[in-house]
Length: 232
Length: 232
DNA sequence: AATTATAAGTTGTATAGTTGTATAGTAAAG
DNA sequence: CTTTACTATACAACTATACAACTTATAATT
Image 1 (cartoon, rainbow over the protein chains, first blue to last red):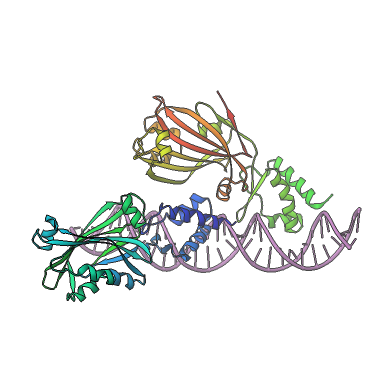
Image 2: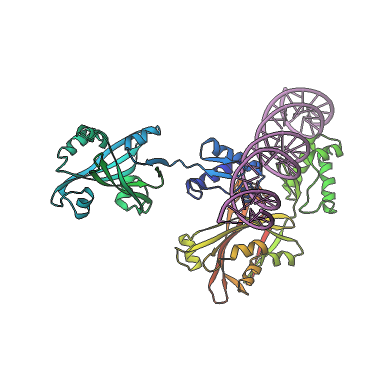
């Protein structure tokens, strides 16, 4: 087999091993040609194959960059899971992990601006993009304000649709905190990632037009597949 | 007697008269075919005989290079590349293929007697003898212990000199393992040998006078040109 | 401190030359 | 008739070199 093809395979292996990470630059063509002991044109031919596959792209004068094919999840004033995915021409799907009705914790009550004696509804869901589970969400919703929420949500599998049925035509973010965590074995299993893989965690409140909190929630994103695009 | 064989003998005579010296290129096949007044394929047939004898080596796109066969590489308590070559009146040269700083693997950490969380410096080099690449080395060095190693090595291109600058005046082998491998196409290209040519591979640790490991390394020798002379 | 030159480094492109390989054909020898 | 030696041609793969177009970092200047 030709040399350029072997180098192509070697580089592809490095890329899949995350030696060169999405968004990062590859060593220059000159450096690579020295490393493999071939002429620059031979390297260029190997790189061309990877460019054709959409794995790499190059910018004259700048370098060769590993294409970042992580899903760009937009976080702005209005965050809508399904719409976010559909806008990028991917297929969204939501599955319910569990639900629970219990008394609010102090933090939950405070963030939902409800009495801590009130009950809340907890829903945990997995969000799939093109059938790949990549997003986990834990929602806390006032059960007093929305007693039928879960029944409707179970059929609709959409927060937006559920709220519309419940008479809330629009809602938006009060705030969003972004932190990082490591996946434990349970999360890794749920989210199809490795143990200790980095997860992006957002903690946020969605409120209605009257500025009353609707949900206090947390969402975990698999860092290897999703990047958060913050909008103003 | 056939023409190609006469040309073969003529070229062989030229080679033994040092008309073409090891490390140098022969005239191209086109030039030779015109000189001898034959078709290029006839010349190729003559050259093939010399390639089979290990005297010549050709590289597509580059030319035909003169090799000399058996270099005796001494492996004892102290192994010094450049000194080894100079002692046999050859010219040594070292070129860097690549370097990398990353976390130690388990094996590397164990052999260097460092914590596996520590970073290591990886350096890959090609060793040339009379301009013929024949030795490939992959070194693993503690980046914590020698943070400036690569900067110095890049200028010195000598382990001995680099270590001296870093305050290590002497070092010697803890052990050496010798195994055999086959050259893949990338290694073959780098080391000017044929695909599947046997390579001698040594795996070893160099330690300082306090018996602390300095480098955990592997060296590949082209078996057709280099023989290892083990000393006690 | 901000702006402008300068230099060095990167990818893109073009041209020419080298060896490797495949196919077809001719002539001579067995 | 088959094999061997040799020629002829063409193309693929790879090297070597040079320069253009462009980016980035650094130094110089204001």
